[in-house]
Amino acid sequence: MKFFIDTANLQEIAEANNMGILDGVTTNPSLMAKEGITGKANILQHYINICNIVDGPVSAEVIATDFEGMVREGEELAALHKNIVVKIPMIAEGLKAIKYFSNKGIRTNCTLIFSAGQALVAAKAGATYISPFLGRLDDVSTDGLQLIEQIRLIYDNYAFDTEILAASVRHPMHIINCASIGADVMTGPLSAIKALVKHPLTDIGLQQFLADHAKGNQ
Ligand code: E4P
Image (cartoon, rainbow, N blue to C red):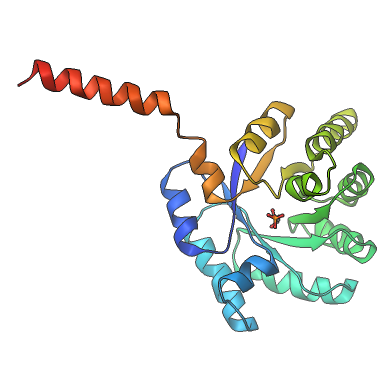
């Protein structure tokens, strides 16, 4: 299972990367705004900065919602760095853009997936990744994990190459459950990734080992 971090914060990206288990990064316009990155030149430079930290796929989202606009923006984003994956919203025009980029060998991440039907058509259009939003479905009392399970079954039935990128991950159990189901990738906050490392019995056990070693080596 690949681990992506879902942030545009350079310090957090570097921290996750230094853990040695980071495979890529996802961003979205809200995450960029949260970091105060505004204006086209700054936004493009920020994507390059992220690519210079992590040697793996970096999703950069288009703002346009029409085919021509998405193609224009997507081509500009893809030209920034070899690691850029063009993130495209799940709308009819987005599907056309995904098909266009797929024919050109440019990788895409189809975002805002909330149903199996959306995942199916995105795969047929040739999306490299699809992002079902687990946490946002859970927020409205709908089982996000069940959706990922259904998409896994559909993709396996037809051997689609499209990777399931479980997004809107909020906590470590989301990550563990996604891994059990067979999501190809998960993207989540640094807090959820770091929480996987911790266990109170590990801390107690280590403390004991060190104390016993110290006693015997006084
Ligand atoms: C996906 O790529 C999105 O950036 C993200 O996972 C959305 O997560 P949120 O629901 O926590 O905003």
